[in-house]
Length: 240
Image (cartoon, rainbow, N blue to C red):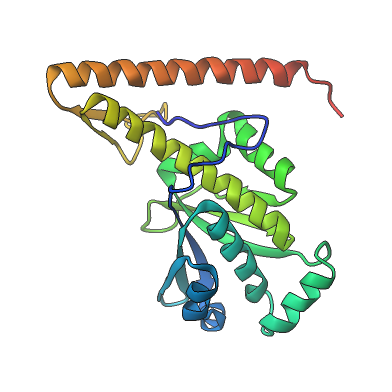
């Protein structure tokens, strides 16, 4: 049972010291275009490429906004051999080009991005203007699924920033409960039955475990009430 922050507005900005790591699939040709040293010097984010047979995995780590800017700018190079010329084209007319980037997201965290009945991913699309497509199945021999983000460079950047905020907010809630309770909390990587719910394991003293359970149930109850309220608002809003 994952906690997903589905809201009708942009996700709250995470603290400045929160670091996000996002991974994206790039082809061998595209990976050769990316200058990692220049990228690190220019943006201050940490990045690397892990080589594969047909696809490479680009990993970018840093503040949410910086990571979103880097990955969205790289979507341009993936669509053009001449990165500099294409960047100038985008600068001159930012609304015309359509680009794409394919993110790798852990299957466990997809609910955070999609939201209940797809409300969160719809909000991300409406807020950013990008098209966001979440794959239904995991990649072969992997626990990750792909999320395609398509649109202008600006739209892709906004969408990735919203996705990053969702991911940090989900990892953050459990971390805060761990800190407050003193217990170790782990979450199963896969659902334990057809309901899609995942098992929480809590390890600690009886007192810390009791506090952790209380905080977890309180968080789930708050999330459930917020979702119900959101569903009610969605049903009463006039359809365009």
